[in-house]
Length: 299
Image (tube, rainbow, N blue to C red):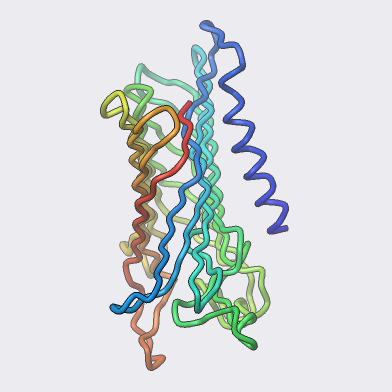
């Protein structure tokens, strides 16, 4: 399954790059756009007295949208994928980033800027994930993963009102949201990972959701895309807000080269952490930032 999704991502990225040759229709109700690319970084040390080791990093990403807008109906679709690995002399290849996020939102206009909308959102990852202190290339460590495809996976279904003043911004407010957390791996399920009860593979929650999407060309060569998701359940944890905030800035240097800055901030009340001694610390804010230079194509 992992290899299938990686192959699909590579195929989709290639297809997007070739889309520039397709003829455009000015009267189309569909708008397709986004950015895809490959970032590379490399460090080589020879007799370096200050220490360190050789390293190489790559990541392939796609941030795409396909939106339909008619007189009364609208249908917004977005796909965010990112996968990369880092090579070092000691640890060999380790995963550095991994994400699949597919969103689809169907809306029916009730006024100039407001829609009644139904949202579906899927979030997971491609590959096995390990704690920073665990090297899976060492014998016996391969099975010490802490995440994998569909462990976890999050499926959110929401109905509510969607505010869309223009093509660049939308805000969905849903008082009726179902959030399902899947942990289909037996080892992680038995450990009660990601909030499921030990031995269970599904956590279902009913709650309230807010999702904001924004994209903007800040300059002729600078593109911003960001998405903020907030969720709180209607149970004893009401008021504890789960946060998922993605942001990408793409700085186009020339026709072929682009610098990208991507960040991801997560707070999930169901994801508990432990300290170095194994003592529970509760949920913590997770943050990732990646600055890369590489080949990119905006469309």
